Length: 160
Image (cartoon, rainbow, N blue to C red; front, top):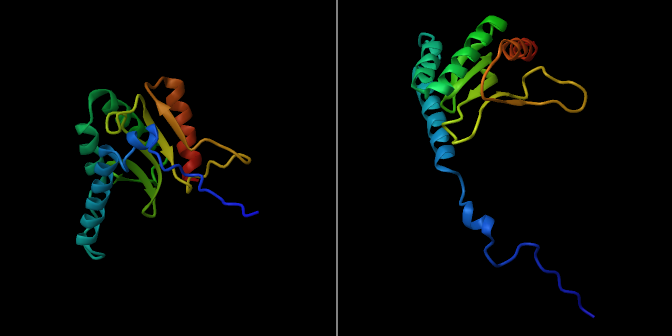
């Protein structure tokens, strides 16, 4: 008796396939912004004067809708106060903070990705390890004084 195996993938198109056709417009836009950031950095060359990346970040924050802009501005101030050694830079068109050119944490606008909340995220370079499991991003809708204090602690830990 011969056993025939069939693929787990169905030949019919599911509802999920109809809804998802690769990257969203927002994701493609973010990738284009990242490519532009890399081209700009490459054009500067290694001997060029150090760019004023903080003004680029502040300009991007100023372009955001008010709700996201207020959150991003407050996150920027917290990062500058809690980890002054982290350098602000744009990363996928969003504010990010890096050590030696590598992103440690970033802010993601809710509006840019049509999400219901903004995000404060941390890369794998962030020193937030706590056992075998820990959060790497946080949803933000508003910030209280307690939230700002907690974010300051997280940024301080992440920066090492």
